[in-house]
Length: 330
Image 1 (cartoon, rainbow, N blue to C red):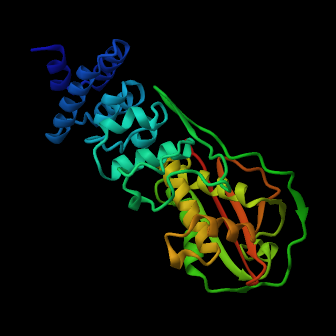
Image 2 (image 1 turned 135 degrees about the horizontal axis):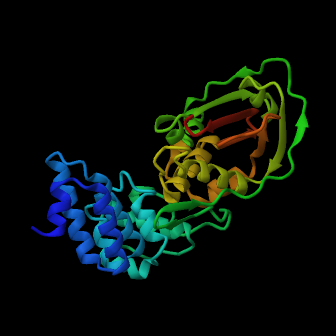
Image 3 (image 1 turned 60 degrees about the vertical axis):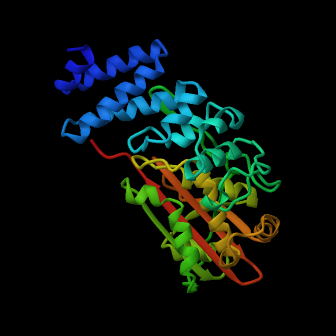
């Protein structure tokens, strides 16, 4: 019986993880893949070795050459990984290296879109299935530099959005604003932090009113606030950051998904969602006509927070969203 056989027979998770570390140090990616397969198969018959299988997949995506990294995506789920494996592999290899090792289909498209948020122009590549997100395969001139993830063997480092301008206290209106029926946009704003609320212990709320951003913030039940105007580019960046994140404990969706959800939310705010997929320049012009406000409350923020308000002066509508998430106590 080999050492691997013994470790699997005993369901020795600590021993398997040490064995995986040794294989990574030796850059023996074929054997690492073999151990992953054995652990995956053992899980199917009742041995709880999924952490070892998942960890092997993550390390191959992060550290192996593009051929091994691309190949592991065909079977891996990444369910318990530090981040989505499409984002992990795209963070360390460019598209030219990865493309020959990715089969046609959604996974190939996800990796491509992750390379796009890192600045690659893939608009001429006809092999990419753009129906996955229906977004352009190149960043638009009006888009921000999205905050990206950096992965290491034991952790992910997730860049925050750009620093906000100084926020100043404001007097919120005392009279309740008239709520406006706009469930599509309200749902889109809440969906930005869906992972925080469904997979972690976060909370989120959003509202649409007839009025301005201060009316919308007050309609959330906020008594005191500080606000600061921000450009549409920064509002899009904040949306994408929130949507990419898993919050305190949720599964990260990745920046490609964050970009898509942010575009959809902006299309909803501008009334263009019914014409999805939107024409990029039309969306850029439409969001430039909106007013965006970052805001917070005087209480100290702990953990993950997302607060944004917007208004369309032409339609007399305003929206506000607030979300927060914290680590579990104990």
